[in-house]
Length: 301
Image 1 (cartoon, one colour):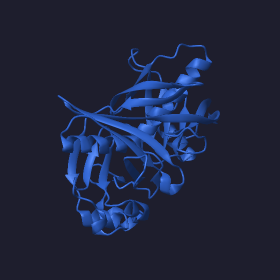
Image 2 (cartoon, rainbow, N blue to C red):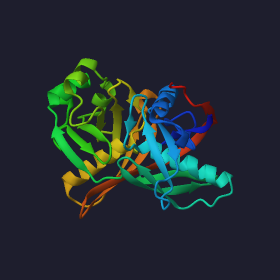
Image 3 (tube, rainbow, N blue to C red):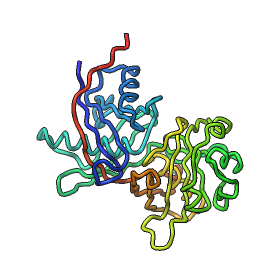
Image 4 (cartoon, rainbow, N blue to C red):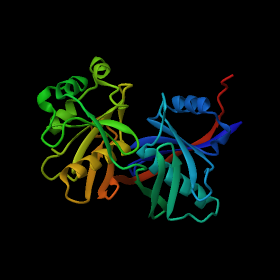
């Protein structure tokens, strides 16, 4: 059996930029093992699989796979899947709603569509969980994992902190844009530090963006596979929620640039606000369709 797929570049308006995503439609005939094989074949940071919702009041059940595991939630797959799904609905003559609700392992992801001149061009999501925090990590150990010096780790606002709004990361503030530019994952340093309370990846960021910069934050994210992600919505939301919780001064909005140092620049518009049940956060951005086709279900017999 063959399955339709579409690829999109996310957190960008330019095709062949941003963070690539593959979206596989009508995936209910695929097993988890087959989904993992397909995600490994695409070899993007994530591939999403769209299935019928378990609750008919929701839009879809979405499963998300990296090349080596299924994850309970991720940012760029939600933005990209929403834009692609809205495009599919419009092309088939169906009314496109203003909002989607995706069922995911981490919970419900609520998404508001953003419309451009040619239809749905972006989306804003609310993460499925409020901010949770776990262990702090020693600055020296984090510096080693990123091939930096301990002085490059900025602990004036927070120590390196395991944080999540649905997917767990080690969130690290760096002292300068230069330190962010020099960061390179060190396999031995990673192995000595991670996983930590479920965190397998490091999200490093700096507020030192330079005079006249349009961004409030520059960021990079390195995975346990020693790869870099051009845009990480779930980690950006976690960082924004963490900074919101620490400052204790109401809602926070940040313009975040990521992927610059790897030649796939992205823009993420992050927001977070404290509520009675915790700090809730999300991200918004654009997406553009790049390719489409069909794939064969992998033989896993």
